Each structure stands twice: as structure tokens, then as C-alpha cells.
Image (cartoon, rainbow, N blue to C red):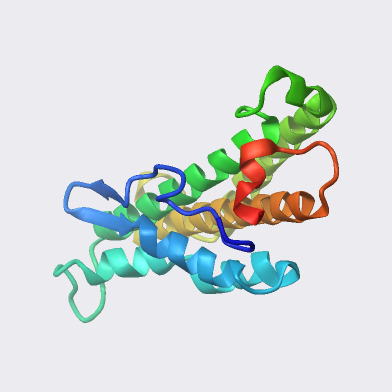
Amino acid sequence: MVAGQSLTAGALDAPSEFARDRLSVDAQALSDCVTKVGSGRLETFAENARNQCIGIGVDGCLRNQDASVDGIYDRPTYLGCIGLERRYWGWRMDRVIDGLSGASLSQDQRQFLNRTVPELDAMVAAWRAYVDIRCSYETSQYDTGPSRGREGDIVEWSCLNTQTARFALDLEFRLRAHCSSRLQPHYGPACEFGE
């Protein structure tokens, strides 16, 4: 692959669309956005990708629906589109975590990872706890329970999508920076996007 190119849905055998019922999020458009941003400076990759790419899957999904009344979509449509984009970012995050944990490495190559895998597991666990608290906090200004209303659900799901995307992009930035440094451990195939 070309230096500076990001992981794409096609390169990682992801479906080009994550679809449910009549809704779909174009994973290739999301990957293309990250690839375009990734062609710039490594130092600004994660920030630029967060600013330019998070939400474009939701926007495209909503544009493909004809259920809008004055630009407002029904709750299931909003939640479905947000949930589908979050699946994309979760898929991308899982691929980077697999690369960092050495899932694709031989036993000989994994010897360098004995110290980093527990640290990675701890970081992922801390991130999950943080997201639960952060999104609960953001949603807390809305009524609780099943009657909390449309806005509360949308705020919660948007928070989960944004935080999943941010973490995936931050992990990818760390992997890119490590791979370009040529330090040990070498993550093998996970580093191929940067070579």
C-alpha cells in the first residue's frame, strides 16, 4: 500500500455498506474520508479525521431516506443511521485492536507483545468505562427511562458513535506513529498500511 494511506473497508474485507432494513451507511465513504485525511501530516491525522469524518455516514444515511418532514426524521431512522455508523467505527476499532494485540502475528513475533497486550486490554476497559460515564452524563439532562424522549436517545447514541469513532481514530494514530518509528514490537501486517 502507499505510504500514509489509511486502512480502508476494502483492504480489511469490510462490507461496503452496513445496512439494516432500509437504512445503510456507506463504509467506503467513511474509509475514503479517513484515507484522504491520512494522506496529510501524521501529527494532525486523528484530529482532522475526527473533525471531517465522524458523522458523514449518518448524514449520507439520512439523505437517502424520504421520511423527512422539514429536515426532521423519525426517531427510528435517526437511531438506525447513528447505530450503523457506530458499527463501522467499532469494526475499525476492533481491527486496530487486533493488530495491536498481535492477533495476526506469528508466535515468534508475539514475544515482544507480552507487555503491551495487558496494557492495551486495560486501556480498552478504561475507555469503555469512560464512554459509559461520559454518555450517561450527556444524556442526564433529558428525562430518564423509556419516556426520556427522542432527544435523549439521539444524544446518547450520537455520543456513543462519536466516542467510538474518536477512540478508533486515536488508536489508529498510535499504531501509525509506532509503525513509522520502526520500533519494537513490529506489528507485522497491521503496519502494512504505513509502508
